[in-house]
Image 1 (tube, rainbow, N blue to C red):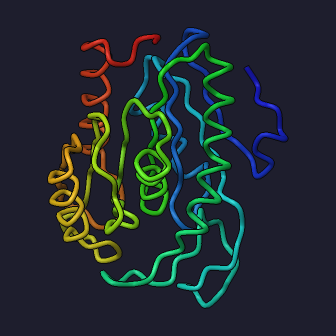
Image 2 (cartoon, one colour):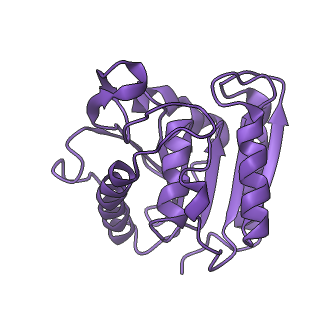
Length: 227
């Protein structure tokens, strides 16, 4: 079913599932990228079309990290250092908009489960949505991401499976960022599965194979059936 363009005027890439009522994967691109960058993942991870895929474009906004130059970004980024300040207000504003998109998707799909995911800043946005904004996510796919606002992460209210893949040679978001998230989330009761690959700040075929196994296991266990 086609979404009303007023729900997300920046634009959506949608791939329908084989069945009308199917779980949905909402995937968010990285800083300065677009929905088309992640669209090929749908065919690789889900060739059987078990899932409906919804990929939104982030709004264009000035980004402090890049000298204020406008680009697609889910929120402002002040820096990539371990102790850089974070745009908490921008994250919450975007989370409110994305939550409305999620609610619309679930209404269209008959309250099917929804999986959040993304690459880099998009992965951080997915983690924020699921755990700071408390959006109902059946699972989270984080590709080369980082844990936003880690000092205020709440105790896990329920075990939501999280797939986190990261490159051993990532110089944009070093592997240390995943390790920090793993330690914090583990101590707070989150169900985090981490995977390390011989790559830089990117996504590799081996990682997508593992992501597909992750989703397939959830389907087999009945975690992604209609609620």
